[in-house]
Image (cartoon, rainbow, N blue to C red; front, side, top):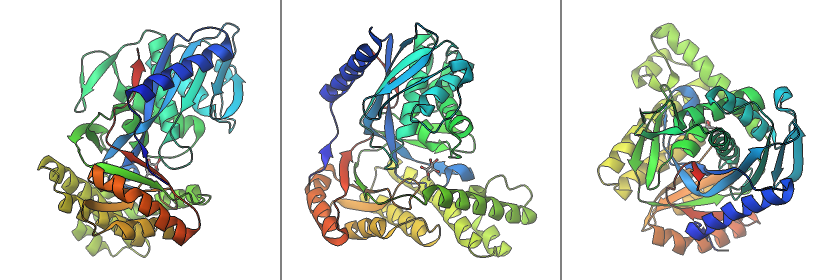
Length: 405
Ligand code: GLA
């Protein structure tokens, strides 16, 4: 099995045409607007976002495309090429129904506060972001839908450069916050802000250094290649394990505050404070991961700014994986296998699990050419060890959300 290559301009145009065709076939006329938003992988900074720490995601080559138009009969509808079933609902009564179009219905509700309109709309969705792999297919759908809804109403967005909004009243940052509200308030998943910010704000050739306590973001040049390895393992326990970790982090912060009442977030706790407070197990390990991971993001960003020395980046990636495996206990045997299999090879910097963990994807960072060479062997060796092939993709940092011409 070979790693698929990032889709180029032709692929992008084809996808835009496909979503226009789907809309036209489904609703009997041309859409008014098409918008798209990418999935993401996180380079480093895992389980730090909901602890007020820093993250460093990149947008991947796979995107979700949304075509939108006003509905003519008062009913909102959504159709997806990949998910089949068409949803229909009244916008004023929109609520989560555990259907795929919850993300569309919720995003249209969230877009209202940005000027996104209150009327019924029809939406067609085409996506090549793999679903259920931990690559933020839901954030891509939320962000693309909100952007499309705003463009439909003629709301123009100010450019966001290095986290600063340059003129205009609304920005892609507002879109990211609205998409995050869709996930937490409408769909009901208590995730941090990383995924929606990455999908909305990433820039081509750059990673997004996002400080999750202030939601300030800076673009960091990143020129290494990234091989994404989806271990294709069931993630049934992920949501409950994720919620348990969040609760553990809150308990750890509450105890640390009895020593330092000024402490705002777990990520900001000083290593000395962790030592002094003698947190009970496993809270000590959870806190150690969050505090050390937050610092690793800072070091990774410095290493990128100083030329992106592969050895330095790799040491941080590998340390991140060990910390997630041993202290945060969110790895899996397959993810550990990928991380171990990829260390100490010429042209490979390092590897780690990415996203929430408990199955899902790992990333291998290195020279683009080396990644292309090792990907087929890695897939074969994985299949020999685990009895099934992984899915693999090679990407470089791609552009975030945009309205399509
Ligand atoms: C999931 C969540 C993110 C983040 C990661 C772990 O992907 O959606 O907000 O918490 O896990 O870093």
